[in-house]
Length: 531
Image (cartoon, rainbow, N blue to C red; front, top):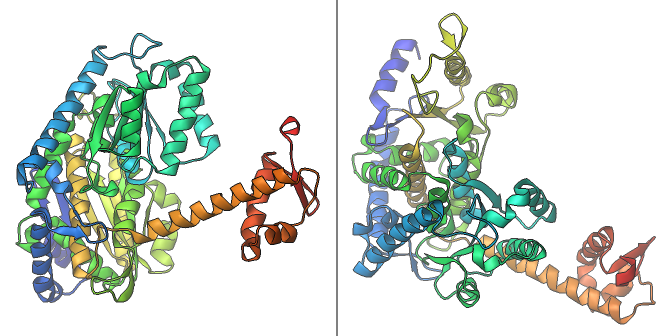
């Protein structure tokens, strides 16, 4: 296709959402002229399904739950006045609590004011807030942000070391819908112990974001934490960014959360229209379907040409892969659906894996994300020209165009999302765009995007390993003088089928000198005085 034909194709398929300053270009996806007309009936069914979802239909049959993240930025669409009032009240509470922290109406017991926020969560309770914190950070941040999003002791220590003496002035957000998520609970216990060791009152520095009546909610109430904010069963973790999960840390940092909500609401409105060529979420979902054959046959590579969007690919991995990676379709038939997501940033990609993307396996399609304004304050100062009439930002923009062209010339498909600027409003719109695209695509491939049975299976298996560890330690304690082989221990516990698991448990305990000492291939109890 010559340059004139490409230009005509670009103009024909460019889709703009001026309300949030976003445009989607699908012209470098090599679908034929008959593809979109052939898919029109299917995408109209997706519009119908989305309307039912937003009206309050049960979308998570496993737990009989509605899915209402769209109501979070348009409460007037909620199916009941009670839900609308809950949403509006929570946003107001977030704003007022953050204001009181910033103005020192709320202070810790050991310092004159709060200086930092430590957000403890995992998965959807952490990835979105991390993205927003990094993308929208500035010198004007009111509080410094930190995150614990794993159950790694070394990670706990590194974060505590970064906070250092400011631990006494750190506001701790504990985020878990059920209140029983192990990673979040462990992080909370570690921080609670660290504060106690310094003679500080954890409750005077703690806030819970959790389900009403959950174990965490009850604990926070009994211990008189500073505040509790709700998580609702109709908001999934991976779509919770515009709930208190994402709004509270953002507001504490100093982000304009009203603009974030407005951007998401404006994108929702843009992607509700049923004229497909004007609906960027529908077009994106259709491109996913075309590129992968509706079967996840190719990977989605996210390439933002903006340092502030480095974490976008991690956020989208959960949003897309947890939503679309399903064993069965809506009829219960085994289909093994999914869409694999990975990414880096431009122009780091040029020096990392573009070589393979251009010349290696053609097992992907790319989505470039370009931000036109180089900085948050364009024109504030004359930018440095590193070559004649060329700035560093011009280089970055040129590298995007060059990479896009190089991929296209070698038959590699790509889309480009263009933002006029990166701010709270456009980031809210970008997030809402991908949320809607996921929903549309799920309908196109006939799966449920709003449950995650595979995640629960992994949690149950992990719980079994930890219960086996407890049995092992108790058995060794009861026989402190004996040295036992793996086989003897497995037989003693009547678990010969779990010998490999027993091996890994003992190997880990012995390496950390906890309860277990190892000599060659024999294990014995390690008394406390020897640890």
